[in-house]
Length: 248
Image 1 (tube, rainbow, N blue to C red):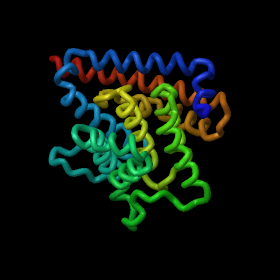
Image 2 (image 1 turned 60 degrees about the vertical axis):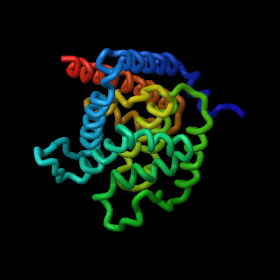
Image 3 (image 1 turned 120 degrees about the vertical axis):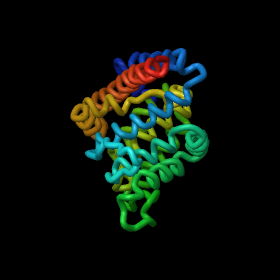
């Protein structure tokens, strides 16, 4: 069967952008702080990712000394961040590789726990027409595509932002799912990159590009994918700054 993402990979600039993202993340994994001490830098990356992801959706970034978090968006993003770090990450990656929709449900349960009154809605996609079908198609693409990992991550990210399958915390889930693609594919196996900082710094461009992706036009989808690859590349620079600090 023809890979449904191949036409996207063949668009001008997409493959080169994916290669740059891959090379940047590979380089940060070779940093001296990450050869043995990657668990420490990955934990810091997870926290930075969570705070930035929260802020992209209008949440707080404030972490109180006592550990209490008042803002429900930040609280959810931090829970997701914990699931994307350490042993919990390995478990979640295993689920993602077998059943992506179950992993998405888990992410939503964590992200939206303080945002819904009816707990039975946690992890359950909306019943709107077409949502289940598009999620199934996305899962098949994740499991079957041989496109470069940065491209798959961009498509997962963009599709979840477009579909808003749960109706709450969809942005946090979408960005977390993109991280899961990066980790599970071996693109960023330890979760060192922090592309969420890029999204926050360029929030309007991010939102505009996501809206373009939703149109489905080749130019817009290609532009979104190249922007996502650029975020991964920039996230590797953020990871390098974390590693440099760890090195003293």
